[in-house]
Image 1 (spheres, rainbow, N blue to C red):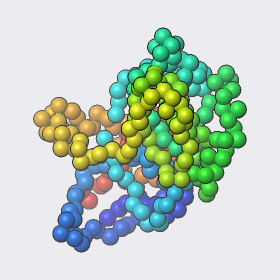
Image 2 (image 1 turned 30 degrees about the vertical axis):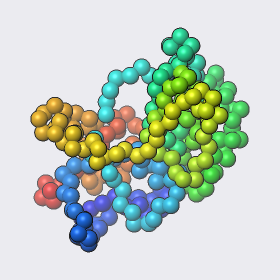
Image 3 (image 1 turned 30 degrees about the horizontal axis):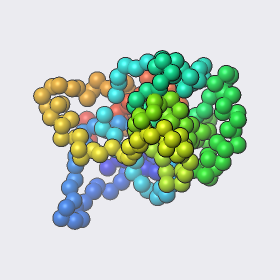
Image 4 (image 1 turned 180 degrees about the vertical axis):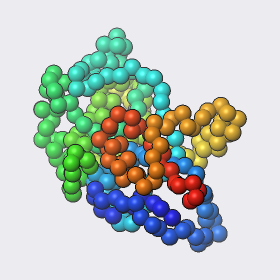
Length: 251
């Protein structure tokens, strides 16, 4: 079977892999007719999530688009903007969906705070990504791993809740615990509990309540999957949710 395989930092390939086999009584082989590219895999490729083993097959995401008021952190300070929008109180709930590859602001005036934290951010990057190999604008680790967590703790109201679904490796040990404790914040974090949601999602698809195809922005042949990863990593327009497809004869 064809699969995107991790061979090392910035080294992913479309390889021929052995077909899966039942090894334990509790095993099951699931036939996928569609998959997609997820931002989680970029952490593995960039080197900001350690402990990866060569020959690991990437890919797990099988489904986003909701309207929201956006804040461009290169033009305005997220904390100040959100406080202004909420009458100085802050929001009740914040979700960090970015994770370890967060970027700080690079233009004034928002970049002023980042300049003050430049050395600490540099140390964080070295801690989570000691091995890096950027190439032609791809696979560049985020330059401020704790930036989104800091913004979350700053812009949230007292007694609010922070949800963390962005990926952080075990080597990341920077967290704004002082603000979290003194603002009486609750923190919920973890990877998606797929087993809790998939049955309901499958039923919603079955009865026509939702159409998974509506979230796709690109459909590419599997032979172009590495190019798709590169475009997705560069945040190129239109490469939000890509489905790599098999030739009809292989499905």
